[in-house]
Amino acid sequence: MNRPKKNKIDNPTLPEEKNDIVDERNLVDLEDSSEVSIEDRISVYWMENKSFVSGSIILLLLLVIAFNGARIYKNFNEEKIQISYSEAKTNDTLGKFAESNSSGYLGGLAALTVADEAFAEEDFEKALKFYSTASQALTDNVLQGRALIGQAFALYYNEQKGEALDQLEAIAANTSLAEVAQIEAAYHLAVEAKGAGRSEQYDRYATQIKASEIASQWQQRLAMFEQ
Image (cartoon, rainbow, N blue to C red; front, side, top):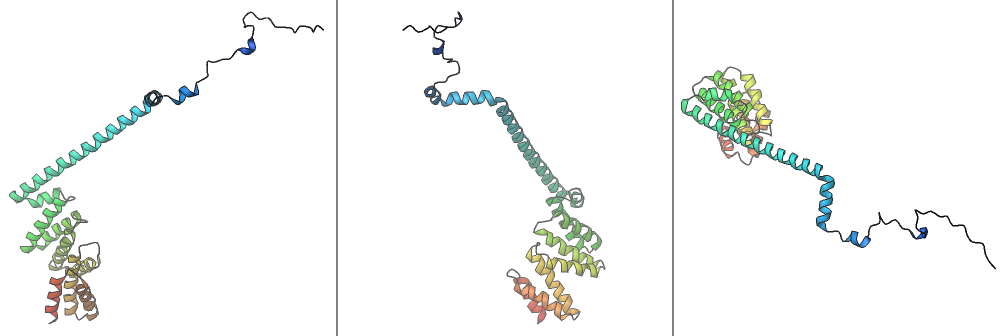
């Protein structure tokens, strides 16, 4: 029995066995892909991300340069101030130095020195001015309490007794100050309270002094006062 022949599309541009044609252009050998070297992977990553990586490196370099520049400038400025401080001590111009550097540690130290000298000379108005400058410049420094104590006594001898006692009370209660400053203020307040007959206030400050572990000097003075 003869079967009819299937119609076959004749296309001269196609091979005879068109069903056997496979497009291999986009096929990747899995074995070859898994064996790509790390160098090749890095190369591919660099080609795809070189703009981002280059920008990040440049930004990092700029930050490092800026940081080092700021540090060098700060060190230079501090050295310059130290030289000026030494010259002011030599030339007896610490007052001017303190006024010009009232926001820095050395300016505060200069102001404290000038204030002590003025207090010793009984120039209480000048002492008050420079103790105030010192207390503001020496914020968060152990010497701030020292400056505030001086300021209180300058107020006291400058006929501002009420303000002086208020300041001493504030110092005695301020736990952010050095404890030695708190205890000194408490001692003077205790003596004042005793003289004024305020026994309750005296007992409060005396208790504060006796409870301190670093106030042996003031404890001895209080004991002598009580005798």
